Image (cartoon, rainbow, N blue to C red; front, side):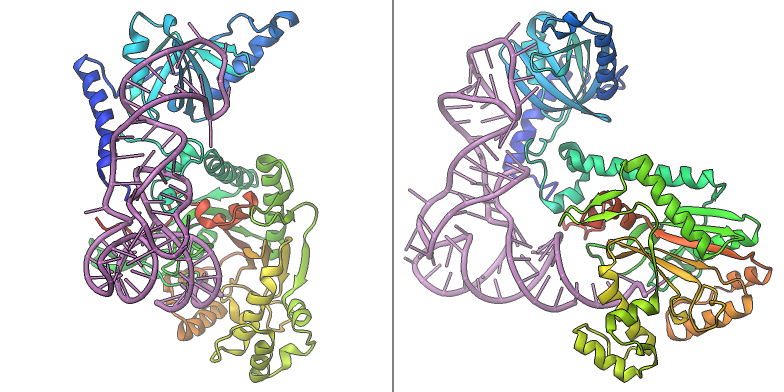
Length: 504
RNA sequence: GGGUCGGUAGCUCAAUCGGUAGAGCAGUGGCCUUUUAAGCCAUUGGUUCUGGGUUCGAGUCCCAGCCGGCCUACCA
């Protein structure tokens, strides 16, 4: 649809093409090489405010206060209010919106009528002039000269509602970013969060590394991979589904504190909470364990609350529920949650059939073929996790669920791991990492037997060289940002979410 | 993959029981030198997602397809 050329689009475009041609005929360049920008919308405002402080009080309150500093700003025209011999224009730059005031008589003879009035919404212009405050109090550039920097040949979406069609928002995100300031702000917040994650980890002496995205064996998680062909090696490779196994090789290599912020790819369904490619943070720290990871994630989220959000309380956009990240977070054992929820203190000693029968009473859907531990896990995922709205560390998870973590010292079949659940979702699983190569091989072989994960022999060889004891953690960044911004949908946090290509 | 709802002008939305497809914004032509979704006058713009069918007559009803939203399943 975006490229559809109905008659009307053509009409609107034809008008703009005509203006473009006219400009060229008159020897003007509608797509200039550059514009010398001295200020942004924001720094211009700041410059005017500090100028105002130098004025005697009486003058700064006067509507006829003298003009402030001269600035040169540039941006895209969002609104155009032409009022006879003067106009108000708002332009958008990287910092936001600033207003321009253009008087006919402030421009060279004829320019206002012949050129300026022919500008279109969406055109990018540069302007120069002093700042002043209008009658209604808005800091505005009094334009003394201007230039069309880049002509827009297509019309912008309607200015008041912005773009609302979700399909077009995703396919033409740039239009969403131009017209919807809250969307713009969300992606700026996302960037700031990533920046603070790095700062926090760098501050704790973690080394940021980049490991391959193309894997000969897609390991470290259990998900279907995307397959691609490596021509130079003439064999199939996989896009990575996790970062884990290469980061552990880094631990073997003596990088005791490493992290990677990277894209992983899972060839599975698309939903409100799933995009096939998403951003993952994985962190590994030698000479600590999953309890060290608890401290780390708690500190990291508090750092983001303080340095990005300015609050520990986050209100969910869809229902107004408040998530409180302040203070210490609840810690509870997996088995405890299961027993409470099922109301059965002996749940774990019940037979598979008894468990299956119980799930029917609870009204949750469980595959009748599911293994014993999978039934329990379904109870957790469908009845418990969605209710863990406030931050909760769920600990001592059954060993069948995770092949890469160390067993708890009590040897009761549970693992030294936690899953941090917030907002009804798993935000970060963390383990005391398995460093015994013999057990690790057994666990992975068992999983290969029944699951689709292949054995990464290179990884096992690395472990046989000795990996220091370590805590490790994975954080789904998109979900974390959904949580931190109160958004409802993963697609609001991903600039260009996966969509089926349009048929031409 | 299954279920369900939707697709009307460039954008945001109307259109009663099946009876001539409308409005606002944008565009175009005017008026207007401090506006805030500026205002006023005039005006252009439609293969109603696509293809079939029912009917005297289809944006509206039926069938199929395309694309999307939501729910659901797979994603430990």
